[in-house]
Image 1: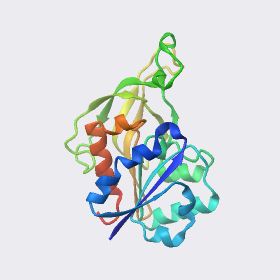
Image 2: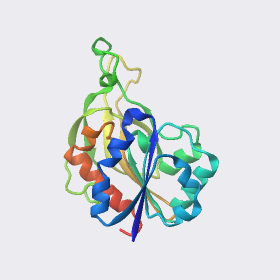
Image 3: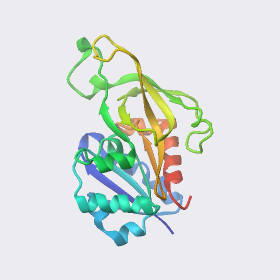
Length: 231
């Protein structure tokens, strides 16, 4: 039996319950035995983690206890897959550099609209942008057959390292109201091997409507399967 552990919580602005609920039927239809936890405490349960094939994490910001992080890292190194999207995986546990090294990318900012267009809510950061599939992405099982596509939502600027296998990118243009002076390309979808474990990250996914975009949902569903060590 293939076992999936869904861990959700943290900042509620990313709708961790509603967002992960979108993918529970997919996992169950694929034959996963799904366990849902509302805190990261399960990461410190060595027996539970040893029986887990896939972790779907949606925990934005928040903190993680040392024993929990130790358990998560040990599980991934031993072969458990780790997957997620947006802030639920790329903006988790800012207190931990070890977590940052594990996932390979950390949210830095999401650029905003022109100052005169700001209204003081989340839409201030909703910009039209393109997710561009890389050469590697065009043949990878997660993104093969998907063309470049457009979104209008938060565009993540991600700090990252070269261990990532980048399947898609997005480029932040130069705008007069931002302080950078040349376009910046960030990974939008990547995978990472850590020990025996596979890691999958997609930066689109700010809200359930973004997750229901056909391209985003397809990439995430494929990413969940790919990250599972038995797949």
